[in-house]
Amino acid sequence: MWVGTNFNGLLVYEPRTNTYHTFKFADAEGHTLPVPAMIMDSTHTIWIARGKGLLRTFHGVSAPVIQAS
Image (tube, rainbow, N blue to C red):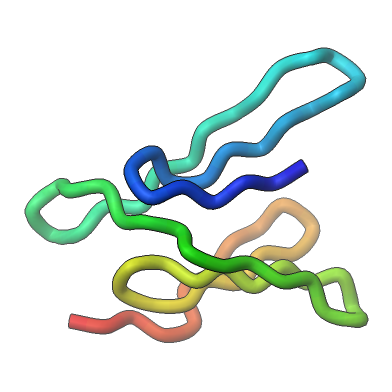
């Protein structure tokens, strides 16, 4: 399960191991950006909206798509 948060970035829960991982996205000043939305498309690419841009992730690799200044 993937959960976007306002203050702690992205939380990914692993039910098989009952653990979670935190991924934080920061701006130039080091402030953690919110993750207000996510969606998975038909190719299983996960699109992550961040406070200042859009990120896509697939097969465990992430790449910025739109980076706002």
